[in-house]
Amino acid sequence: MKDNKIFYRRNLPHYQPVYATFFITFRLAGSLPPEVIARLKEERQQQEKLLLKIGDEKIKKLEMLNMHKRHFGNFDEMLDKAANNQSWLEDDRIAQVIVDAMHFRDKKTYNLLAYCIMPNHVHMIFTIRRRTSSLYKGKTASGPYVVTKILENLKWYTAMKANEILNCKGAFWQHESYDHVVRDGNELERIVNYVLNNPVRAGLVSSWDQWKWSYVRNCTL
Image 1: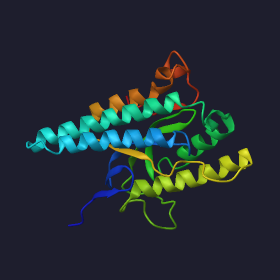
Image 2: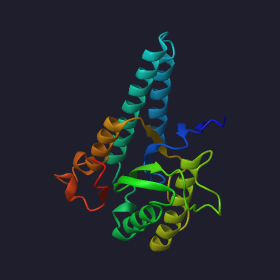
Image 3: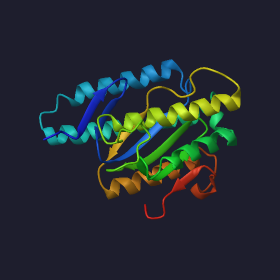
């Protein structure tokens, strides 16, 4: 029987079941200084080493999950604080390109549940479709590294359009993205609320529904 669980590593750990709901975060190239990334990576690795010593596998798994949540929270907070460094997504023309691209793929490669476009990063939640009218040269979007393929396609297209708007060349998005498998309905509700309230936490608005570049599907919450 074919294993539908996909795992690979680059700079971040990735676990990608073929059919699942994913919480994705991708950011602008250069949106965080290298020294900040290095410090966050070192902190995560040190914490992982300590947790790997736990003998009880259930406790170890739970502590690892909690540690990665804390690590992501620190990472996201750093992005909000660094928004003045790179903030091309504040340009309505670029934000609209991203919105259109995400909705274009809705019901083709995934079911789009929610997103929030911040000044220097994007949060996105979607469920992989079992049967798709694929965007990948006749191949279905169900297969190894399906989330990676979706993001590569989405980031390539939006980077091309954004660079045209900005009249510049070079990397627009940071190559690496963050992905997290949403495990149940309670976690989905928590993550959707986290995503929608990112502009509130960053001090950009006082209520999530005041942010122009947020979306949530009606049946999600």
